Length: 378
Image (cartoon, rainbow, N blue to C red; front, side):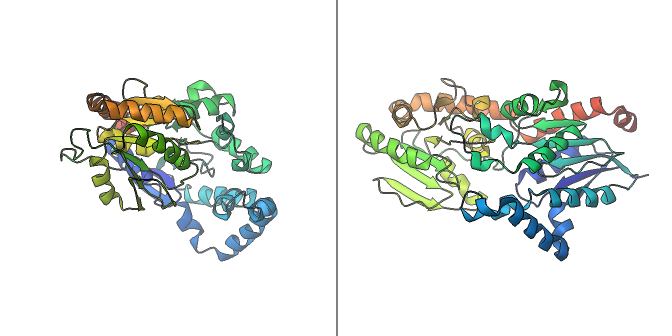
């Protein structure tokens, strides 16, 4: 009998899906990791899609029309589609060769009655209420929130990327603490062996990488950069991932880039800054650390897990432009500190934030949760 792991994802993005599937395959070589893609399951079910559009309008129509929510976010958060996915997955997982199922994120419930089921997520919907700057528009309908609770109730164990989400599952969803394990995450960009091209942290180049300019604190960074220029007129700001209209000297707006091209911008930076207001995880911080960059960020979400003030970077409160500017100036004043902070951040990534380590932590918990798995591996 060929034993298999059912690996359930919603499309190939985020890239973490491929990394986690690979880590499971490495740590469970006796089993075949079988990818089941929710989007592919739904792709040719036109009637179901049409019905769900109607449910999306019914559930979220006024908020969509008011610009408070996006259709693509609401589409996957209707009770109708939730139950349809649940039914489809029950059929897919009827194969007796599956040893356990493993799903990425918590937008649906892929658990089946007979199978042990694991979840790896970087968010919960109610975690949005834990931020100092709350946006209630990010909460979905009460009926969806009730179904979200069942996702966690039906899981054998839940893996998270951060202590922030672990706390949400325990405190806001009532999950037993021993049912949730923070295993962190790895990077999507592998730092190459080439040396940094930042004049030993003296080129004064501040790097921002983010798609959502407003949520990621881009406007606040520009205001802070104006103060930075008063102390360091030759400082530079490089914005990658979006194309805002920015009226400030010494600023380069690059826009979106393929991952392969992004590496050069990390190598040419002296520090990384993303003063985000809301961040479930923030993989770009891990990428910056892997390139030995000091980080200035906000004290939100998962960020305090890995940005340690005075050791590998600085944390400021969201919206505190003066403090943000001061911390950037501190680093620009001291290239040696930038180097030390960057080295400490890189060491943290090597030890905790890589997919090999994530896979090992998952295997330890999965084998502890499933005695049958230990027997099959023996």
